[in-house]
Length: 247
Image (cartoon, rainbow, N blue to C red):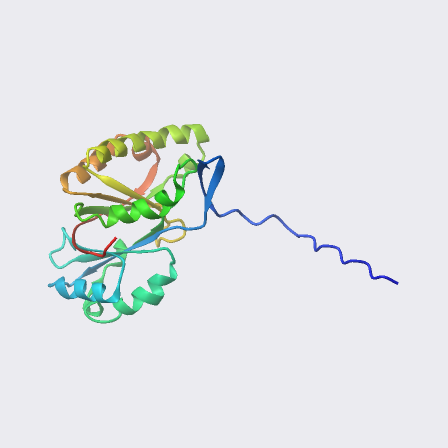
């Protein structure tokens, strides 16, 4: 007697979530990607000479930038980039636990970590997720930086999608005007679940001079998102590049 073929196993429960980043159509095909760029900012005090730090980062092949803290004469910050977040532990952690970093005093209140993300209509998904953020952070001509986290209020999440788009477009237009004039360029990272204080995003403002970075923050104070729908903003780290890895 012939055996009855086994019936395919039926899935129990809901379908698993689709976690891919999604962009606009390219050659008629919707873009999808599971690649993202993670960034982490660590801030330290007690540094009287940045040269040994830069040498250690260069020798270890770390991808990122070292900043001098404009508000602390002995302060520095290290921004690192990785597609694989395991690199923060497997490759970066040993560097930070050895000299000269081991002698520094970390300032955990300034720690920021986030990941690049797509909105859904990007014409080149890899450019937005991987290449443009790296070029922005490692541009040799853009030495000044302002990094800060933010958390939106729950009221924003409950707004209709179309109203959210209008509010975000106001911010986007300001960013584009500063960027087109090479005054300020922004990095926007999602940090849901990655932040000690439960922030939603990490923002980096980067440019050749400090004043425009302050000016763009001032200009955005008047937008609906900042004036009506932000629960928390900051702390702000302000610094200038003293070392960068190759792009």
